[in-house]
Length: 559
Image (cartoon, rainbow, N blue to C red; front, top):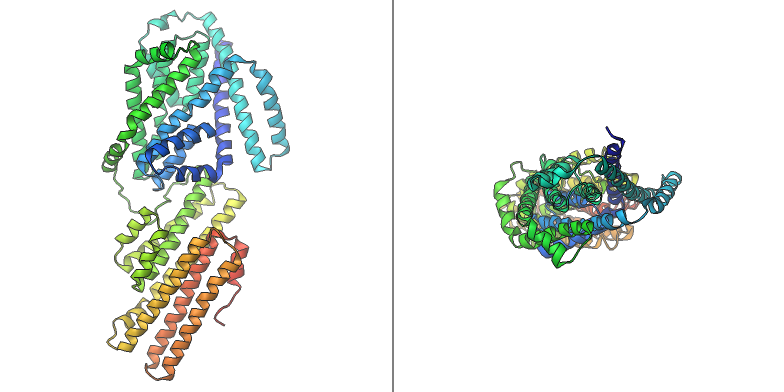
């Protein structure tokens, strides 16, 4: 094979390596901040689209954004139509990198700019490789350097190929053939940015005419869809819906762009007056992605409804945010685990309210739950169903936690996941306590003795009171995760326990209830105290570090 052709092949390999380094670095640098932005700014389709544009423009990785969106949609954090809107926006945002390639990549002496960056980034990485933030930043600049050095390889190789091969036959080839070339290249290398870089290099070297380059770009629009399809094959129905919706939208974009290719080219070159073919090609990509977004945005709701009917969820899971698959981005995997643990603690609180028929307490908790969570809670009419769901969810959380430990997370993430798992264990302890005293509670509830029935109401009021406090603690935990806050709520629960114990002693002193019934009341009081204390510690584990929570354990409030 000619050395000049090897230069093109090597440039493609180096370009893909640079993309891999940049995506990995951006995934580590972005962390939870961009995920929170994505969650908070996708309340409607327009905001979701703009979020996709902005975040992709900043991260410069539509693949990373797409995988985050796939995970969020698959776990119910993003509605399907909003997830599709984010991906439409990401298609626009990714054109920023193509603008940089079309301008800087072919207009300057690349070695004068990027070789110093390569040298500095490599040296700093070698010295500070143990510092994760600095290492990720160095990987980003190394990847960026590789991109532009790879462009130089491809440009030089293409110029050599043009000089030695007769390419005149390409001018008479059908445009559909170039569309398929764009699709195949993007499918094989799974990067539309890399396909654009190859096409720009070929166009710069006059290896292909402008119309052919446009057709390749059109084909690349569909090639990127298959990455999400492969990632969703073993996922939930929501993931499959999003992948299928992405294919439908990109296929429609490809067909419309190909059908209107000639007038769109005239729009870019004549109306907008872009004479530079490289810039005209990138502008063409921006035009078709923007037009597709404006065209399809009003129909996303209907498309989402159709996809929900087409892909139904068959396997019921007790958990809502996690499934069998661990997201490849460790911070995202941990974020989903945190959301699931928070939901687990809330549903244990709801189970306690339902077990003691404190409808008012259960209704007051609605604000704690997300809409999708609350719909599931309302669908569980029987307390046995609630407990079964909680017990099954605990098993799924343990399974996910075990896989999480093997996912190669950093030490701080491992510590946080362990703390969250402690929260699960404490909450499950509370749920089991509620379950174990159900027969004692039912004995009071179903008694024909008015005094015994009154004791049920007494304990029901106590449960309502404590759950209201725990509701407050759950809401306050993000503002104040200190040990003093935890101790304050534990102390209030302790006081309730002592007051109830005094109440039981007074009943015993009056001989108004048999000894067996007094023993039942004492058992109820102790188990409820233990359950409410466990929920308090479970909430504390959600926001406090392990050492601080352990301070709460050191207390022995009932001695």
